[in-house]
Image 1 (cartoon, helix red, strand yellow):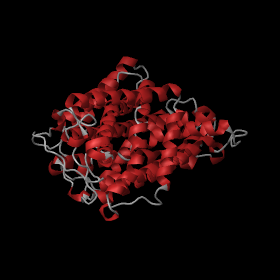
Image 2: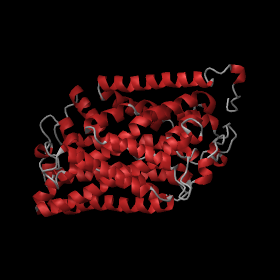
Image 3: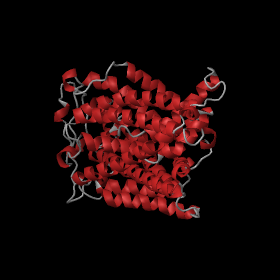
Image 4: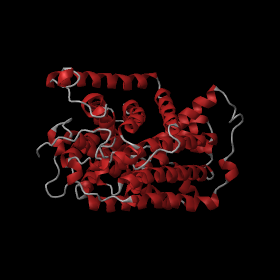
Length: 475
């Protein structure tokens, strides 16, 4: 497929007229319901069902549920950043597209976009792999004699099944997304419906002594609880990765993001209360299959098996949603000429980026053979600096380039939510520990050196003489 140059941006350029090759070929098949379903399928997955014991352990009691509240605040504030960027610049690739345009498509935007792709090549497939491994781990309740190697093959099989379902038209994918999302909603509703009548709220909120004593220990524990919560909230922005396939993006993208955060925040907190209202929190902290144990206490093993199957459904829905969204990122970079050209190819009859999809899926399936803790540590530390913090600084740049009339959605109470998001993500990054902070920083430094070497070889910015640089109309 021949490469076509993407139009340069200036302050008077209407974003609705910015049509890259992707927007001319991809089908806008996602409305508000499928977009919200895509986000929520990505957010829920198997995460809350295996991480609630971890969250309780961070503060040694149910006071750790404050992490859901703080995490929801951070996700909502950051969601407003994604909403304004996604509504003004709807395109395949999400963060890649935002960073490239706002920082300057011929200057620093090239560096930021390259660094995002650099970290994504590792973090994107690793995040997908974490869902596949989580599926396999929870399947251990149904198959107690499963060996570690058999579990890895089950995880790989989940990736292959998701790949097979994604190998079809976008209009079909939107219906599949809603179907998987319905399964996710039914799982959460079922847990609440069967648990609420038996929930002992006094037991659920039986706080240990000095649970709310303010001090460094309380703050560190709350930070850890928020970190666990954010792992479960991640995905509220997934619709931005398929911006070229969203109908009325200026309306659908912001609404789907905020609806997803609100719905999941309420569901996570309610499920946490119900679970520890049946399974005492001192016991729940040490549980590997908290929901299955919860259901077994109420209705026996057959009911526990049924809810485990439902949880596996939600885990698969998360893998499906992640693979759908992340497969569009190398595609968008290749269309812009910033990644290998084969990734820009669309399927000849079904119009989806099949080379990118196959590559991302292949790396994720290979990563599923590693340990879950290694996968999660690697993906978190390589993502925060460029994608989340980088995008927060991209927002004022967007406002300088576009007039208010050219931005279909404006952040509420600007710039307060952006400041809250910046402080929150900085705290999350630092709380991961010195070793992981170093890993994330070194990863980006190496990426910067690779970018400079590539630019030197291709005689492009920043090595192109200033007199030969194209004028930046936005300056």
